[in-house]
Length: 54
Image (cartoon, rainbow, N blue to C red; front, side, top):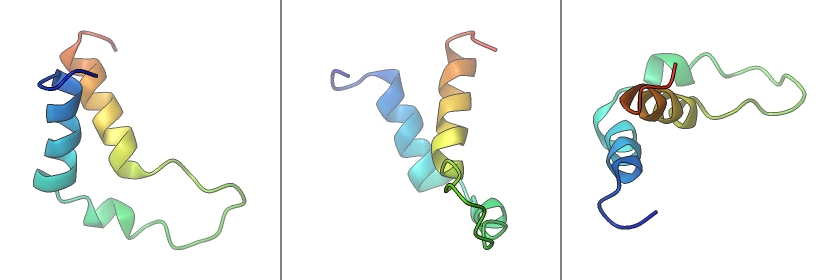
């Protein structure tokens, strides 16, 4: 992605501005394959929504 792309903004916002501690605290149990990181999933959803993809 080139500098200034919306994906960078969404990623940085999720990393720095959102408190995902309540969600991260639920991932204490080993469930076989590790689940996708909740921060990555939130960023993916926000990016998709911002592009009009549901």
